[in-house]
Image (cartoon, rainbow, N blue to C red):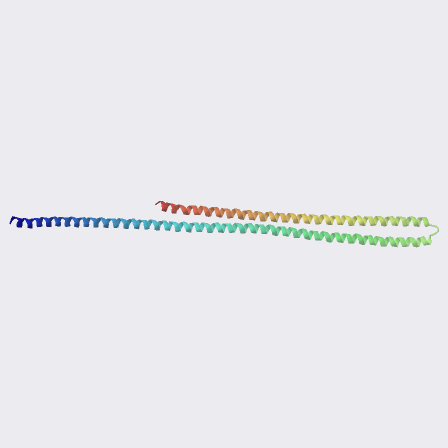
Length: 241
């Protein structure tokens, strides 16, 4: 009988212990659930904060990109304007050189025309004088015919004087012709020298424009590299975080 009573008491104790274990397990599960919920809330807050920081960095990067794009456009506009101004100045210089060359060419044509006119006038005057001399010679010949016996010596002297004068006139004409030819060659050499100087100055202007273009391109390249360096810094900060 005692054994029969002892068995229900043992069962009750066993049941009590089981209930206590179940309650402990239930408390443990509730605690774990609460901790899990807190951890999930912390993770969600961390994720939201990370997303917000990423969005801020993306916005900053967009703003930086827009600023760099605007700066690049301004630099490109300034470069194009400078190049166009240099080209315009070079074109103006070339136009002025062409105008100077044209004026020199016109002046040379005028001098050549004046020279030809002077030569023709000198030849005409020489021809007139020769005609006059021929007339004089004819007159003297007629007179010599009339005074052949009495004035042979005088006629011969007159003829000699006339011949000397003709020689002198021919020598004068020849000298004038040589002087005019020399002047023409001098003017041609001067024009050639001016043309060479114009070509050299035009080449120097082109070289200057090319050098300026190279410097502008180097400046643009340097600013582009600087922009890339600035754009890397936000990325490095993000990786560091």
